[in-house]
Amino acid sequence: MLIRKAGIDDLNGLSELFNEYRIFYKKETDIEGAKQFLKERLLKNDSEIFISFSDTVMTGFVQLYPLFSSTRIRKLLMLNDLFVNEKFRGQGVSLALINRAKELCLQTGACGFMLETAKTNLIANSLYQKINLKLDTDYNVYTWDV
Image (cartoon, rainbow, N blue to C red; front, top):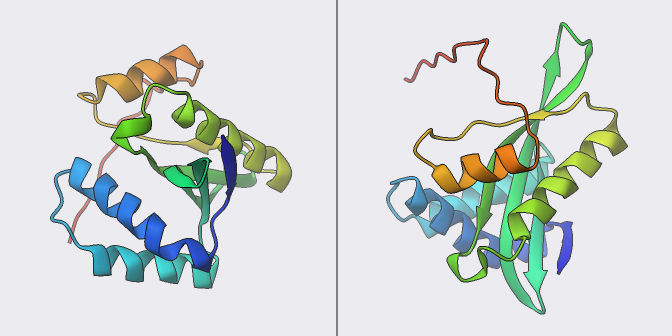
């Protein structure tokens, strides 16, 4: 398995995976919207995207956004998106992508990363517990949508 940073040349394949990811989260298919969104992220360098391959087939991706922790007075990353094509699940791709995110934290001096997933996403929750990610039960998460 190969994992590397995504570039603009990966836009078409990455957009297909990103569209599958959005559909998984009950969003309407929108390849062009996905492509435009990812193109902006890649050109503006405002996220880090890593992609995984099996031979020449793109199998998954992870996208992280920079944040800052005032209490830790350091950079903190938000692991916002993690997706593996259904055909490649159960083969360690998610774990490899998460490990790449950990490496990014170490390389950039970030204090760590945070992520959230639905309580009903049993497979993801099981993986995160298995690899010793800490479930934060001390804080409530509130959102506001426009």
